[in-house]
Image 1 (cartoon, rainbow, N blue to C red):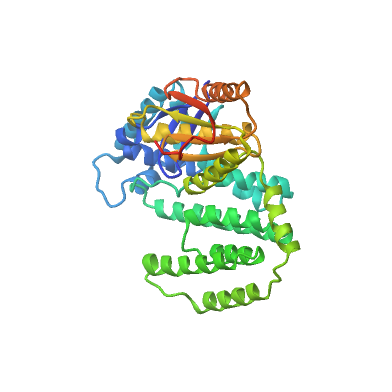
Image 2 (image 1 turned 60 degrees about the vertical axis):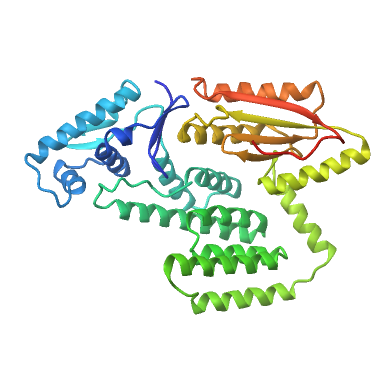
Length: 400
């Protein structure tokens, strides 16, 4: 059987060997709700009566059992159209329906639930960080709701709470090791999911103060106050204000000396592996600094660009994001420390490659293309790359 991924976080789509199938929700919204409900039950048999209450709450149906059987049959047919045999995942046992985990079928929300349980049992530091990284790569947004599940919001809230609690457990472990740079990174990713969570923001502020980044900590406090006013129509609590004052006082008491700064910088460097990923503004600044160095030293470095799809944006959003996420992992695992990467636009990555030359540069780009095509063998995502030396006469980098 092919490798199949079912995605439910932030949207609903399926992938078969890297090829995206995103029409299931459009063709049967309530069928997707049925699939989600059975998946969230994790293999438990659910009676037809309970499914009818859950999916047709408040509606009177003539022959509800027949309506459910028709929906199940249609859902199985649609899943089999994605890949032959996938419809068998909707099982019928002991008079009820259940989700059957088939070989080579991966469901993101089920993996997340497994990770939540593992993180509750105090794994070793390396394993905890590996699980945390995987969890944050899967939990890019909350559970997608079609609006048909009676208890859909409760399921979403439960997963959201489990995610935040797992993040906070990992932060507590990192605080004991004084790994404040990692705490900042973890908090910032989690705050994309829940920007009004006070505890996450306080942990981020505390880590920033410990890194002598008191100005950044103050900015985070202002972000939280603004977000609470916009989303919750609430002013900061007395506890939050008191905590902020304590952090501000701690920031004033930190000794600013070379040892403190050197230790902070060396930990940040030790925590990073592979290339340095940054936003376009930082990439542009680094580029201009490098260009000045090249002019002064008369040396050369290389600029590489990879574009997925075509410039006209014909690639579907789901295929584009899937391809770009896969490409980012390839770049992360195969470029060297010292290489600098940014996402220039929706379908373009750019890279500064100081360690390659005229012969190895094209080899690097070809290796990245080969790895990408191995990851997405169906060939429905076009891969275009260019590499060029940078010299003193080159102008400013521009975006696509």
